[in-house]
Image (cartoon, rainbow, N blue to C red; front, top):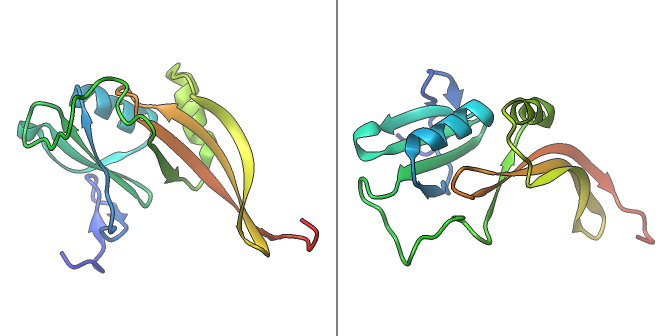
Length: 158
């Protein structure tokens, strides 16, 4: 598929063209991870290879690959100890943060960081706002879901 073509998720819905960067996360138990990523976080399977313990997931324009440790071809550079992904957080943009927060609460999934509103400076004249919250997946990967609040101009004295 060419880089500019539209692809589809596992349910046949259009998703964005293949991005230039898609993280692939090693997980201990793919079924457990899929339950979390799909059931709690609203991702869909774009395609999978169960015999290899692999699934490619999409949610809106976010895409991630999950691969079960010890199956298929794992590229491991050192010892893996939970929680995985220490020092890494994956920023995932969503149109509306609230339904995700409701789903996580209903599933009794604790948040790593409660929802907050933050404005980040992008240059000397402008900042962008987000409403965001963080949650850890079953393997300890930190997911930072954020909803855009748009941008605003900075005052000269700020």
